[in-house]
Image 1 (cartoon, rainbow, N blue to C red):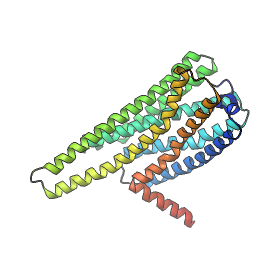
Image 2 (cartoon, rainbow, N blue to C red):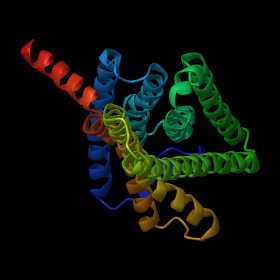
Image 3 (spheres, helix red, strand yellow):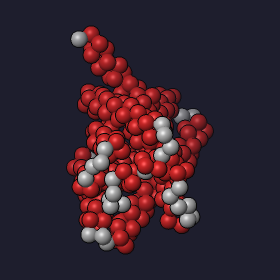
Image 4 (cartoon, rainbow, N blue to C red):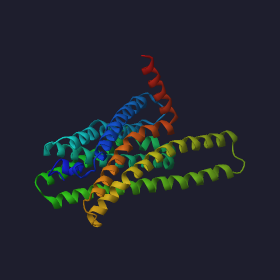
Length: 302
């Protein structure tokens, strides 16, 4: 993986002009991911309506996307236009695989958090605490850093079987994250339907209590839908890269020009996810959207 530079990224395999388009696209996405996620981090600091542990998870995801725009994409662009050292390629691979692991695991944790908020009710705030969420986030980053370090060391020492095992560990972690998220949102969907049926079909309900329940369910659904869209966007952006990994190892697709182009486009799609998430935050969470508007207004007035 790290035994060459330009060959690793397929620039020499690209038709004339294609590499320029991909480099320009990655520069643009790097800027949008950096500015968008920095804006979201500032906005989240001023939003008080989101439960602190949930806000911490949102911040973790935003930090991951910020690192993609601030570190991964600039390194990728630099490596595709210059004859760089193997060490710099290893740095890129390390950060790439750390973020590739942390981002879907964090999204899966957010989906579990939303499921617990629904199932636990009033006990949720006592069970899901800042301390416990910090421990979970620390474990997620430890897993990402450990496996990425193992992958880089394996390639440096030419232990290709270990490197391959590390690669499949990454794929397995992503697949587990997707399965957890799908299970959580499916469970949320059916639980919400059941609760709504209970509220609407209750015999002689207390009017104020019924209205309050409906409003709580509606507010919760908006938050869940916004988080679900972030998860679905991640699945759409990560999916083609996972398919390409399977095809390269089991489909005997080789390393033709078409495969290099497809790999580079799928990588751009992966990077695109970090630029999409801030948009989905603003679109799905009203308080975040309002705070982002306030920040932009203040910046324009300065």
